[in-house]
Image (cartoon, one colour):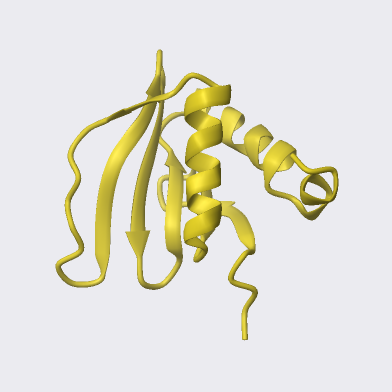
Length: 106
């Protein structure tokens, strides 16, 4: 059985960073970090899950945009929308989502 608290980093179909987890607790933690530590705001529509995926409002700060949603196959996801956001999301993952980050309480 997979670790439900695990957070994974991969590359999305658009070529940019994709962070995903099945943990609702981890999704909330990441969202709070983005908003209160890094100054992102939520912007856009909420599209409820009708079949197997949902779209949540994006995280937006200046020219950075992180798309947010839910998919049955990968869980909750954060997807970078441009190269600047890609670099930010990869460093965000290294700082807050790796096992080493969890050990130091990040």
